[in-house]
Length: 385
Ligand SMILES: [Ca+2]
Image 1 (cartoon, rainbow, N blue to C red):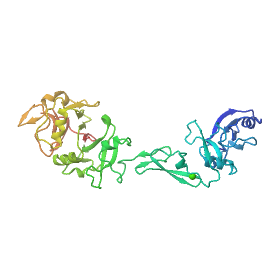
Image 2 (image 1 turned 90 degrees about the vertical axis):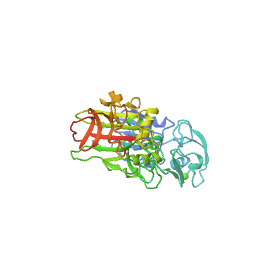
Image 3 (image 1 turned 180 degrees about the vertical axis):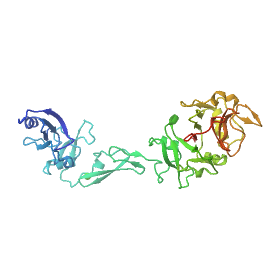
Image 4 (image 1 turned 90 degrees about the horizontal axis):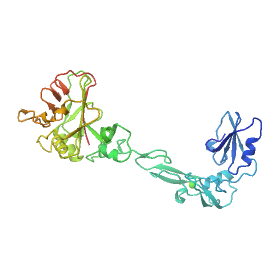
């Protein structure tokens, strides 16, 4: 049988010549597949035109139109995709002239000059190819090849996906950069090289939460041991294979110098308590929070008005922004932080004294709680974008 070129399917009487007659009376018909269940499939190609689609099928047999077959591309109703296809279909006997071509299947064929004596037709030059816009076309004898451009992946015809940040050889500047390039493969591992060192970092990007483009800069999952996150002194130590890391203030400062941070997101979940999930607001209060945690200032930022809660947040701390923080040994000051230095991301960035704490230190793993035990898989994560 010939697959993929049927333009009409219908039932016929068993043992009749209905299928053959129908093909003979339709100008577009080049061949037909007779299905043993009494079904007829009319094709607009012969197996000579499309040898790659001529396949074995136990329920169908193929018949070429026996007489009065119109040659491919000679009428508007039967356009070819290329001059080469006409040559293949008509066995090289066909004369040079004008033919109907529709290379990309638009349904609007154009009359095109085909030089049938030429050894080859350059489809790439003639605009007769169907390569993807992110592919290059290379002419070959009898055909042409489409190859996705560097950094794109696909078959070259139907798809060429942007693979920025997908592998070590093609790092992006940031998670946001990958997101903005128009293609990503969801949350997960990517390669970025914010310092342009040629030695990229393997990082985790959250591409879905609140619009995506988030770089994971602090992560800790409770596993029952007395661990706390390793405090990294350089942003270059970020590695997606670490399940337990957090950038120190000076590392945050370095990161921000190469990859300017405009927003932070704090997300922790204790299964036996609650979920705290906030992003810094896109306003001057939110910006002050970013400046504090990226070490641009040691002035503790105001809490109220500086963040917005995400959908899964059911925390208590976010209801008491005026009571957050500690400053100059005073509590309930309405500010982010505890007055701490290098470990400010894990040492009470968000807390209401004696009630709702974010802390990972001294055998304390608090997420919107004060003295609850942690259970396996409780997590703390901070993202920057
Ligand atoms: Ca060619």
